Length: 290
Image 1 (cartoon, one colour):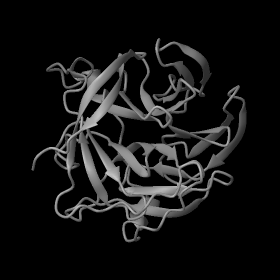
Image 2 (spheres, helix red, strand yellow; image 1 turned 90 degrees about the vertical axis):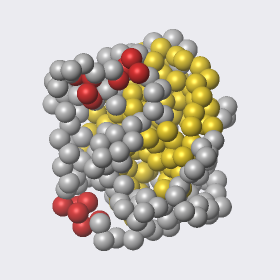
Image 3 (cartoon, one colour; image 1 turned 120 degrees about the vertical axis):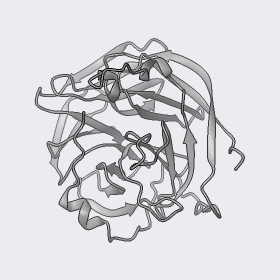
Image 4 (cartoon, one colour; image 1 turned 45 degrees about the horizontal axis):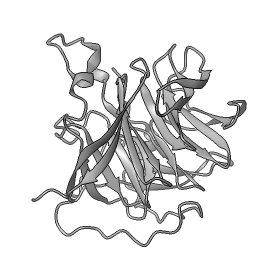
């Protein structure tokens, strides 16, 4: 099980206020997201289509481009960067990380793929066409999830802070502090996706009461204020992949929901999880009645 470490960098970030985000030209410049009065609405889902997914892919990062999924997988000795056929789940291109590295979030900017590592403090930059390693960057603390608005990179480290990174230098430009409507920081932000001007975030083990107390929840975050403006309840989406035995050491304890990809051209949303045998195209429904 992943050991959650709160780094000194992120401890200092607790007192920081959220900063405005300069959205990239590819993403457009969305109008300020309206923060709901009262509790953030909770949305449901419908499964539109089910696709095969490698059950040995410990998904840590995911995005969609030109009909293919790009996926980062984790665990020491098993981590990789992959290009995957959506319809078949076939891996058509792959780059294996060194055995000691644990792959994490990925994103692509200007034809370059950026891949985080968990505790190595290392981000690799690849050519998106041939997966040729171009550069390596160092950063403080842990690496969890990552996405892009088309210009900047957005990175999580397991806390309630999203770092906004310059892709040229991989230096932090500002931080977004994410809070729930009750004012509490939302810890364990994990894999990210940019969807119509919002940041969507998986929350690692959201079912734990100290984290959120609700299984398989995705947070919809205003990148300008850091406010959570909505939730997506994906409870029950893949019961067989997450079924656990009475054995406390059951490996499925880590088969958490993790992986959001958005097809902007087709307005399609895909989700999967660690070692899941399926990837799902979903439609968001609701919000649910309060």
